[in-house]
Length: 151
Image (cartoon, rainbow, N blue to C red):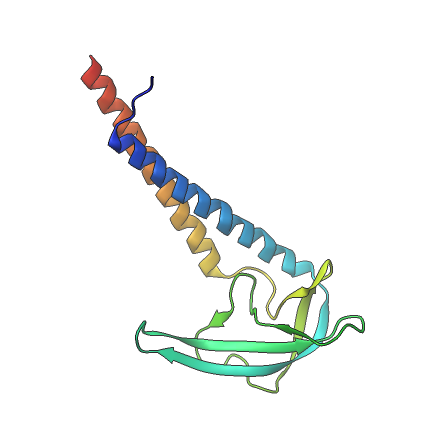
């Protein structure tokens, strides 16, 4: 029976976490790239609220916008870019602003105000790849140490 050391198990866990994160954020990135080709419809900002949470020290603006597609009832969106509902600063969009809404032609409930991906998604992919690489390195070291002990 294969007996794995604690270091090997920890390495495999790190690889799993990094691999899952890479898979997840790569999916977000690919979906965000698809938004470049979505058709636009007119929309209107209905909520633009600056929010600050002193407990977490996080600040940002929450948005909501309404739009209509092919006679469907009014739909509401909250995404500025795919994978992102928050934006820093209070002045990106003002309540009442008219906007172009990029709508997924296969699912009208999916919409964004800015097509494409944002830098943060790419940073998250790189961080997850680095975590996966760290796990692989730890696994390599664990295997080498195990082989040295067995000799």
